[in-house]
Amino acid sequence: MTRPFTDSVFDLGQINLRLLHYFRVVAEELSFSKAAVRLNMSQPPLSLHIKELEVMLGTPLFLRTTRSVSLTPAGAALMREAGLMLDSINRSLHQVRKIGRGEVGHIQFGTVGTAAWGPLMPALNRFGQSAPEISWSITELTPVQQIDALQLQRIDIGIWREAKVSLPQGLSSKLMGRENVALAISEQHPLAAKNSVVLGELAHEDFILMPMNSSSLGGYLYSMCRQHGFLPQVKHQVNEPQTALALVANGYGITLLPESYARIHWPGVRFCALSERLPVDLYAIYQTDSVTPAAARFLDSLGGEG
Image 1: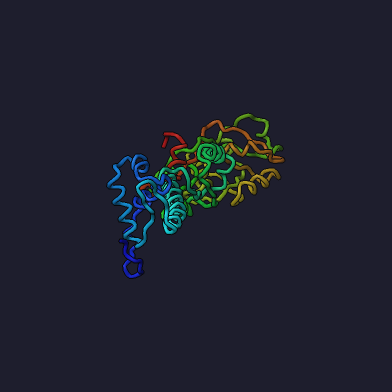
Image 2: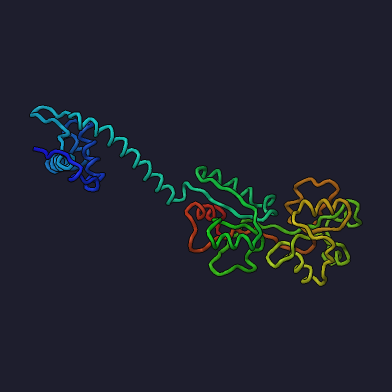
């Protein structure tokens, strides 16, 4: 005879999912023998497990006769609740498994503004097609800000140019796409008629550059000019490429930008190739020891080159 239920003796922790699964199969089959076959076990242990569950709950769940098995009112109630509970747990565990495999999740990117017209969007578009259940968002940050955000785990992946030049310990990079620097000049500039320009021809031009700290694009371009034999005469310093191009269009100087900016029509601006290759390759940067499965899947989608 089952023991009456009281809160003082009931311990939910004793009822494991396996017991509920056994009960559900028996309730669906209304036959211990058929349920045992489905569960790939013999009937006596199954009967003992159901009896164990009934003892824990303090109420019979099945009415058994020599010819039939039926649910008691308590059993019918448990059938409804156990079905909902097991289905919910299965969905949750399936979701956890997908998260662990990098099939679902969210990636927070930090990126420099000049990446938007380069290899970044094609890479995100390809990734979206292969991993539609992974969402992403972008915050525009300087490389220095991205390093802080990565180390504090506020972003999952940073994106900036020529990141292999110097990375703090604990950060790694993966190539996202190769790109070169192009010259942007006014359509009225004497050099505008040329298809390519030698960097040294710009030694006496007025430059418009973005911020020139050591980790920025402006700083990188300044150092490249130095390596090619001259110090650029920086007439204007701006924060946004479109500001630089507006000044260029009106004849206030020249600027150097990733060649992807030439894909857009900027009124009054002519883009020319440089004879020298000045790489501004785009990299994805990540915290080596704390990559989320979703972020790892994005990094894998970029291919093998680091």
